[in-house]
Length: 260
Image (cartoon, rainbow, N blue to C red; front, side, top):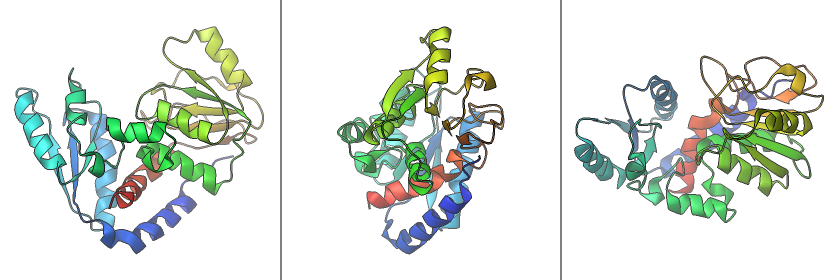
């Protein structure tokens, strides 16, 4: 059965509308303009910012002058809610993250905010994982004491997702690119909850799934998520589109409200 974003989105929109005036800083959206995934990601964010008349500026990486790009980025990040669309496809991407003001970091990328999350403060979840939390809470998904498999270990999705499920008292396994295929397949079969954050769509087949599993799909590529097929009706899952990604831009604004 599909767990759709639409009813949750209406709740988030109402909350933002009521609190919109608390946002005192514009947004700054930064990307490598040659990254098509970033283009679509930021397009959705801009649409939502326009929906609430929240001002924003855009900045673009100049690969021929990284130092100038860093200086411009740091200048804007001091007084803008900064959203860095990754990857920038450069070796020193972390140099940009280090220049984000932790108090104006709605996607919770900075070391300080990651540390706050590690200590258990769910106000510091990245926007995508705030979206996952919204699904869990709205649909009252049973997480406690269940076996959860997180596929992916990125700092912005996979690991925060594992921390969230741990906070809900799930028993967590994290799989990644070095996990042997046979181990991954056995883990999928044994999991009650599958949290997908790998960025790949060829890791799961329908025969590995079982009744009453919950699938939380945080991926997006080529018009679908990490799960590239529709599972049986007796499996609860977030579809792509109209699932977790549909709430991400709204959760960015809610994260900004928490820092306003």
